Length: 158
Figure 1 (cartoon, one colour):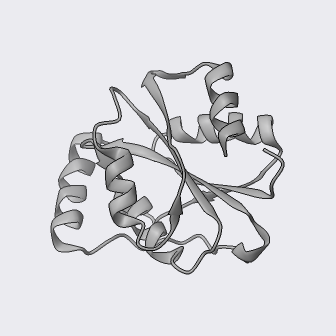
Figure 2 (cartoon, one colour):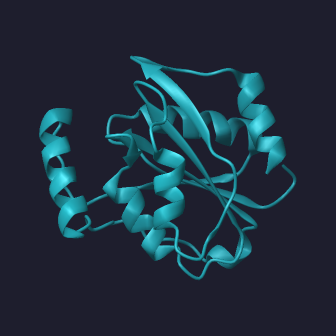
Figure 3 (spheres, helix red, strand yellow):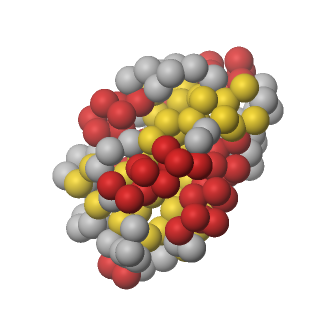
């Protein structure tokens, strides 16, 4: 991947952060963690899921506290987040709203305890007019399990 890339990621429990860090090490791309306002989500996934379901149903997405840089500098945005209920998390939904107007390629990566569910389709559905590339998913069970070979292969396709 010889393009200017920015890694944007949301990570509630640092799992997606670990994958974002690996991508950063492989690519040297700039990296920026997407954060939500304090106390938006509890430290319990069951309680978070209840809040998330309400956010999706109402369209009241969480406020992001991260200021985005000038995105026109970047050819590719690598956007990472956790899989919640087989879909994108509400912070990623909000980020996609903020990315509208970006002209480069947006490639999702995700982390979750099982398969991706409908993550890629949900990402595309919320992407509006963004150009979406192929996604990459990492299975997680305590620690992210991924193959550096498959991660590098995904990155080369971008």
